[in-house]
Length: 456
Image (cartoon, rainbow, N blue to C red; front, side, top):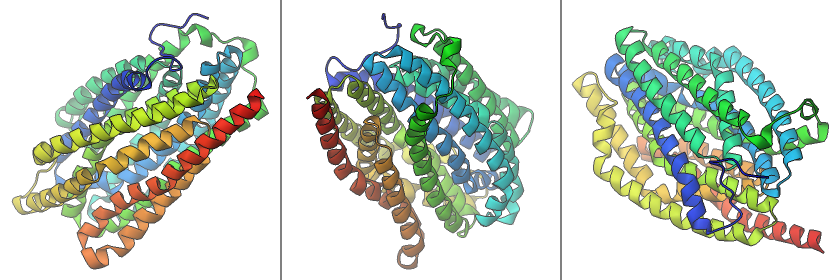
C-alpha cells in the first residue's frame, strides 16, 4: 500500500541518518514544548515572585506523576502500532488503533478522577510550606482538569510517531507553544489571573496540539476505520496493557521517588525550593535531544522488529549512542557557558533571597551538566529495549532509579548538606543505566534467537 506523505519507514537505509532525520522534527517540537515550559516558569517567577515559583516547584513531581502515567500508557500502546506498521499488517494495525483508543479513554478517566481526589492530601504530605500551599493547589486543580486533553494529545502524537510521522507532532507543538506563550502573557500579566492563568494557557495550548494530531491521524489511508475495527478484543487489550502498564508504572515509580525528594527539598525553605525549581525547569531543555532520540529509537526498533531485521536494530543502537553522546557534550558545553544567564530569567524577589536561590540553581545545573552523558545513554538504551516489546526490564530500571534517587536524597544530606539532594538525581540516572545496559544485550540476544527459531 502506498505510504502517506510525511510517514518515514525505518526498515531501509542508513540507521544513523534515519535516526537523525526522524529525531530532528521531534527535537524541534520538544524544544518548542520546553520553550513554553520555560516561559511559564519565567513569567510566574518574574511577574509573581519567588513564592509563586516555589509553589509550582513544590508540586512539580506530583504534576509529572500524572503526565508520566499518561505518557507511559500511550507510548506503550504505540509500540505495538509501530510493529504492526513495520510488518505491513494494516488490518491488525487498525484493530490495534481502536483498542488503544478505548484503553486511552479509560486511563484518562481513572487518572483524572484519582488526581483530583488525592491532590490536596498529597500536597500536604509533601510538606509544602503553608504560605505557598494555596498557590500550589490553585495551579494543580486546573491542570488536573485538563488531563483528558493531555491524554488525547499524547496518544495521537505517539501513534503518529509509531507510523513514522514526526512532522505533524512538530507542527502541533509549534502551534501550541506559540499559543501558550501568548496566553501566558495575556492571562498572567494582562488579566492578572496568577498561576491559574499559567495553567489555563497550558490546557488551551494542549487542546490545539491534540486537534492538530487527531486531524492528521484521520487523514492516514491505513487508518480508515470501519465498524468491524471498533470491536474490543480481550487478547489485544491484554497485549496493549502488557506494554503500556509497565511503562506507566516505571514513570510512576520515578515520580514517587521525585516526590520523596521534593519533600526533602521543601524542608530547606522557599529560596532553596525556588533555585531547585529553576534548574529543574532547565532539566527539560537538557533532556530534549535525549527524549527525541528515545522516541526515534522506539519507532526504529519497533518497525525493524516487525520486519524481522534484528541486525538493523543493533546497527541503530550503535549509531544512536554515538549521536546521543556527541549531542550531550555539545549541550553541556553550551549550558556551562550560558546557563547562569538563563537561570536569571526565572528568579526575582528580594536581593538576598534571589541571590540564595541563584546560588542553589547554578550549583545544581553544573552537577547535571557534568553527568549528562549518563542520562543520554539511559534514554537511547531504554527506548531500544521498549521498541523490542520488552517493557518489564525498563520498569526494573525505574525501580533502580527510585532506590538510588530516594536513597541518595535521604542519606547524602547528612554528610553533604544541600548538595546531597542534588546528587540524588544523577545517582538515579546511573542506577537506571546499571540495569539497562546488560538488559539490552539480554533482550537483543533473545530477540535474535526467537526470530531464528521462527524462521526454522
